[in-house]
Image (cartoon, rainbow, N blue to C red; front, side):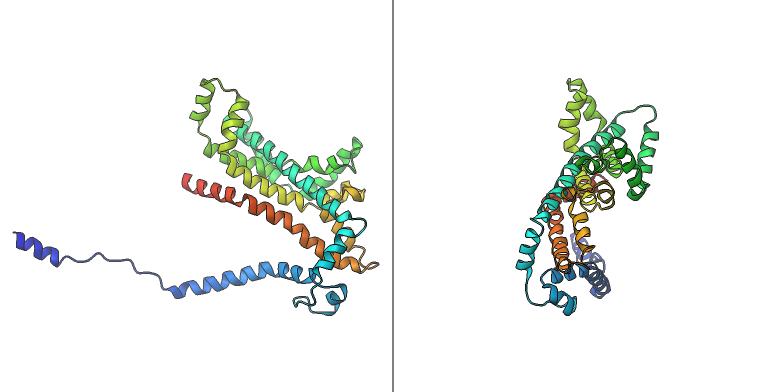
Length: 298
């Protein structure tokens, strides 16, 4: 009996290993992704190369080929042009985008939490209206907003750009979806039994559970406000209140009379990308944590 068992064990078939896909099949995918990445990064490369050229090299040399290095001189000219107005535009953009994204994220979190946790009559109707707001383009709202602010004599002010920027229907939608998935009703009820108020529950429990989604809302809102052009164009007449997008546009529109502004516009566009990159790098670990948490929950 023992011999038979050993013999059967000796001749037992080995487990069949799954065949690996041939590595050659990944080559076309890799080549395709490299081509797409190159296509997406080509404008960035052109901007980097153009920002290092002098005005004469910018006109006389091919756009994608580097020339003599003049980035330091260009940056110095950019920061001293019109008594350093570009620095003021950059600060204005940081104020509009930074404060607007922070306040907008908080409002979106409060609205999304309320729509996810509280049950009240007309909740789905309110949420449907918010979804409709996501579909409305910003260009369609620019003129009505101008008329509203003109009625209260608030155009050409900081608030005429800041207040419309803190409204984020997409942020409310994302906050509601994430709050419904990440905040258990049992936790809220337990906190209420322990005597915690609604604001305390939201501030101490809900915000921490929703933090990955709120980082995403903040990043989206920051980029949207930073790149906003039409609303400041309609609202503002004072050059000192311009964001960097509108300021660079005014310089570009004057290049026929002052050709040197073309180089300053390109260097200013390159510098204006830096705050967005820094913001993303600082917050990406929280964003990745949120994506991983969402994958585990789903």
